Image (tube, rainbow, N blue to C red; front, side):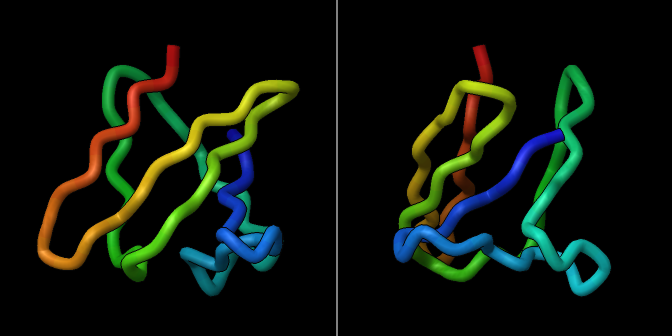
Length: 64
């Protein structure tokens, strides 16, 4: 699991049940729905991955 951080540095609340912005990742594929367009970072342990969500498009984030 990790935390999604919005461009302003605060946690992105993708789920009303996770108020700290934490989301689970399960291989080989995890789908997160309903992200507002914008720039984000997914932070897990000591690593982070940046991604951008655009209106009407699918965003793929490969965690390696």
